View 1 (tube, rainbow, N blue to C red):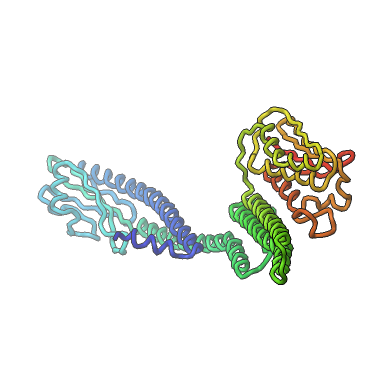
View 2 (view 1 turned 180 degrees about the vertical axis):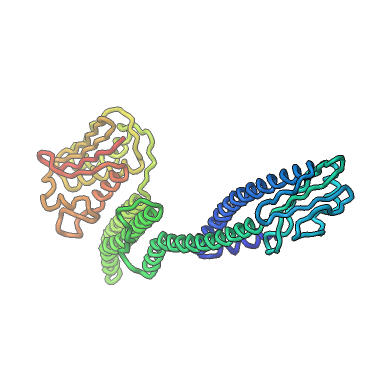
Length: 457
């Protein structure tokens, strides 16, 4: 496995703050190295240009003096010279170098062929005493070939570069430390809300109720949006838990009555002899309670599905056919009661979820037949993309104290909890309207009650 393949998994296992600080430090190291290298190169170039200019001027003076047999001129402070004949013997030399050879045999041959040789003697680092920059050139004097070597000392130039390197290293190190510290503090500050959110989630896992994260209202960054998202998730979780608790409470409360009645009927039938007619009546009573349990379970499950999913499958449906399918099961009951049941609807197509809208209208018709009087009328209209379905009767209507809670679960206009119906019909209607993005409203219609569904279609 390569070095990269070994280090990357280890890097990913580090804490986020550590990874951020390392990333900042690495990036700043590259930036500082690049900046320091550029500064060093610029300063070195300027110093070398000045040194080369001095060396070239000195070289020209020496070449001119040798060519004309004049006295060799003094050079810049610390400069050196050496003149060789065609065989490499020293003809003239500065006292500091005397007869020390400054050129190699290969370099002397190159100069003899007419090349100009320039090189440095000694190194910048490690420190070498007596560093030089020399330049050798061939000169012809009185028909004789001479090699003129001019050299200048690099001590001031090298000292300046070494001082520059030390300053750059110190400045870069301090800058890197400062950048890493700022990066660390910034990363800790930026991730502090995340740690706070994690602590809040841990508190929620311990069973704390109604927990919400403290999200600043005056910011709109990624961490703040994460906080809002988590709070929204907590709202959804609390709503789901509340629906679950309410479902269990409602089911246990409402199932108790029919189960108790069934148990009482069966106990009576088992504890004393009964005739065939009495047993038949008992079975019919038990069958009615069983049907009540089935209806209640279906209503509770329907409400729970609507509340938890919150999404419908809309599809084009013929409004007249939809309402006729909702009303038809109740026509026989209306005929037995001697009551009129009419439907007034335009022949249009609406975009709704017929699977839920049909039982909602059926519930309204059933409520009107159970609790109302006189004719029951279902009227539908479509206007500006909105469907309105109104079910009215000619009974006493809703009492004023019942209207505010008409769409609550298990709300009944009658005082007795054992009255006919589960009290889930209007709650189901309201859930269907809300799932469609619409509204449900209960009120009076002249001489009776009216419930209106208004849905976007």
